[in-house]
Image 1 (cartoon, rainbow, N blue to C red):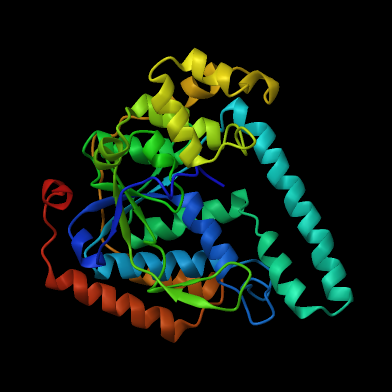
Image 2 (cartoon, rainbow, N blue to C red):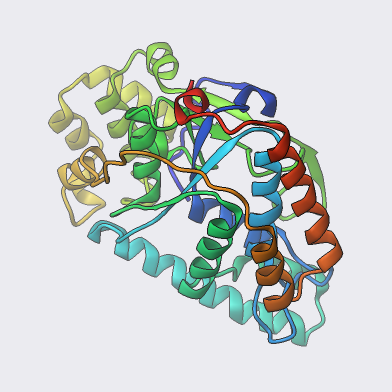
Length: 345
């Protein structure tokens, strides 16, 4: 779900070319879930091989990553580690929601309600341990680095930006801003168009750059106040926030109470809605564990390895994969591989 900051964040549309030569820390789970949800067959079911294994995540990861590399973007995928205890209840809710969607999917299939089948099939998307393992293997073969976060992937991605190992974090959620990412890029995983939720309609989209310092200055609040604001309207650690308080109202309350968070959350009746203190959520966000990274290394593409993995193991169309691999190899041969410092800028 993520933090509701869309209507408050300062953003501007950019061209993908503006990110060429820059390291981008990508929230891996966020992207993989998108691929599992969006990349579907005509009847709404995910792509699968003859063994019944879902391959939508591999298709999306391969072609999107290949496009990044062709544009000169240097992706670094960050995978989630152990979720904070406060997030367990939210994960349980999401799991129950998927179970409910699966029941409705079965009903839609039995009643031959095609529209409902398409809708609920997407809500049942699950990313399991085997899919994560497969995704990491594909990245290794493509020469693209990945990092395993000790906790939340978005916090680790933000940390890479704060420590100048990456230019920006990439995610469709705004949580990276709460974790202090100087820059956040949205819509980076879409190829010029994005499906409108619950409708058979697509809209044109471009990457969107959000700068934290500019957002805080325009809102006239501090980083700590941004965290408090998000908590009032809802985060992954206190879903739905305080009833009746959206982002704009939360901003007014935060500015009214300044740094007196005790008074702020007492006024918002926090204790009436949650059985844990606001301080627990605040500190989990503010002090999320991250792993220091000395160097981010990119390596050469193992073209044969990629073809063997995708085409022999998962039955992807060989001609299509080989064509993309040859394009990548040609592109890499045209450019000398510079040091990491040049890529960060």
